Length: 87
Image (cartoon, rainbow, N blue to C red; front, side, top):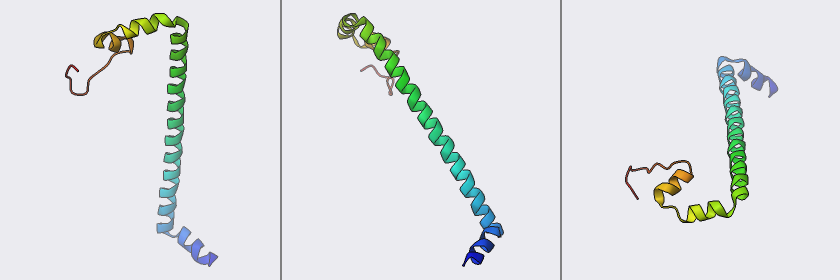
């Protein structure tokens, strides 16, 4: 049984399948690494934004509650509507 598996792995088809499997594992690892780094970056940004909001407290809340749509978008860093309309 082991001989059959070994002969398959040493055949051209077995080598090609092993190469495809190796590339898939490497690509998956790179994708997961990037995904985790991106998540950590977003989380860090949210944490720093939250600290800023807590420092200013009520001043930001009063400004945000009284803001119209364009002013609120400006405070959030800019908004783009998907259809280009004004909602």
